[in-house]
Image (cartoon, rainbow, N blue to C red; front, side, top):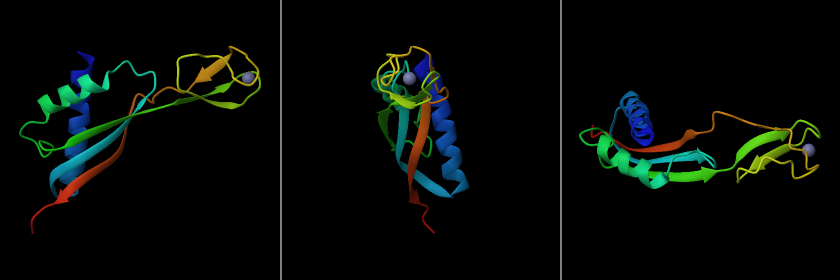
Length: 117
Ligand SMILES: [Zn+2]
């Protein structure tokens, strides 16, 4: 199940950040997902809730934002942002467009509670 492994790697990442900042608890995590990511936000949240048990992120709220995917037109060289999987240049109608990869999931911010001193 794709969402589960995604949730697990997200958890590993935020727990590591929390530990390196001596944070006792993660309050909130904000992530951006590329508009065409084949991950349903609801099931990612569901999976995250499963894996976060007994970690610093046990109380963490996951906020997911869908963001447009950027790319460019190979003919008119304009930068384009795609919010739907329609790969045609809005400027010159060319279908020779290049879409940036690697925007599946990005962590925007992590809010932590300070460790009691
Ligand atoms: Zn174009």
